[in-house]
Image (cartoon, rainbow, N blue to C red; front, side, top):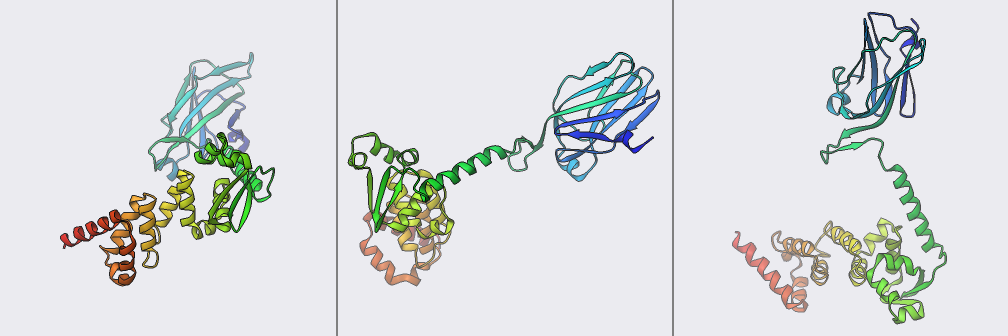
Length: 329
């Protein structure tokens, strides 16, 4: 018996085992073959008029910890005399961990050369995060590639000024942009272009309270090609623009980022912006930083000036935080 007698040939999601001579009272187990994340085996056992076919993954840590949930179509083809093709009903979402989990008993006499043909329709594993099964072949690579290419092309439209049709005037300069992109990302921009406002007639938008470099970062975010360094530098300006032009995802991104690095140098400014742009989590974090963690004593002079200029409601909230903290001692 040659090594090829146990070899299973594979291509794409199809596996075939060619057995040239299967006599009575025979048991054979194939060499392992790779399909998906696992090595698999086929086995056949012939006893009088019965043929038992098994499919199972090789014993391994992966199989033990995360056994495959398989969907497949299985056929046995006999070429002795008249060609016979026997098909098992499609197996859908069958958890297979051991060689006892799938068995096909064929009660048709088969002799001579046979081919066992397995077409894997899907292989799933259990997600440790969500607790749900997902296909190892539905990884979204094509979709991800499409999105990556589209975002790259969109970024080039901005950086290379490809067919721009509106100017954004900032403090210190201007940038070309595209009405369609702006309208798709911001309901405020969409409304400008939808109605007969001066922005629509003049083909320009004035954002003169924003420096040019911050405006460029703002447009880069809209077009999907902002660099993280630029985002961090211009977070507060981006927050203001996100609030003004109703870009919720940018506002959320700024909010989360501003929570990450509160310190004595920026806490008062962030507290003011949290109040101004209605960011409750940032506001609460700033007040805890000042009061509960006692940092207010390190910037007492700056805090006194801040309290003289701050909005009454914000002052009241700060005092409530102070009182609440004192009660806890």
